[in-house]
Image (cartoon, rainbow, N blue to C red; front, top):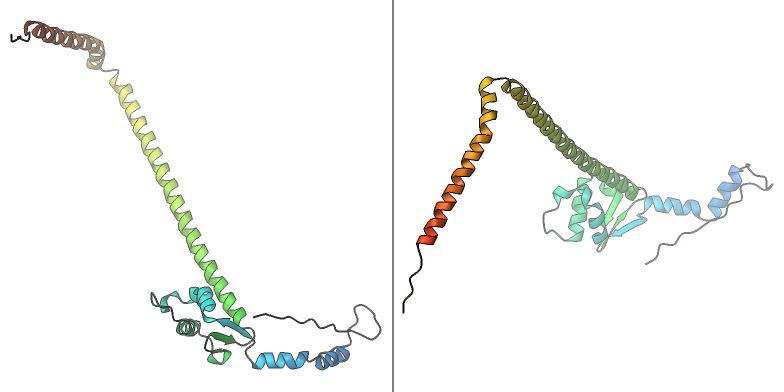
Length: 204
């Protein structure tokens, strides 16, 4: 199948002057060339057509809720979509394999599709921006909590280090570590002595 396009050359005036349009001459040429008749037929007929599978694939986004899951019959899907779009039945006709539209109807469907896609994209962009903002806010809150905790601990330490018992503890702590190490070394020596005393017996 092809989609032929025709170009008609129209003489704007008989004087070959730019910017001058003789309306009567132009209208006469359009009438003789059959352009006006073609436009009239185009308006009364259904010049635009599309197979059902292509229509379903392209315009099902306009009415996703009216198409049941697994519903693949092209003609019925097309009719449901067109009914959901609230198009007048005089503006289209459904054939055996294709749906036919009057002039300008496909352009309206394209505008509706573009608007739907724009709304979907805007929704997803808003969701992504909201998620990123929530993540950034949570990170900021965690940083503030950590900073507040550090400040509180520093203030407590500055107060704590002036107390007499804390000073005593800081002086005694190294001694406690030494005593602990000595105790561990003593236990290790005792374990080693036990290993030396207990010897395996040999059988002859």
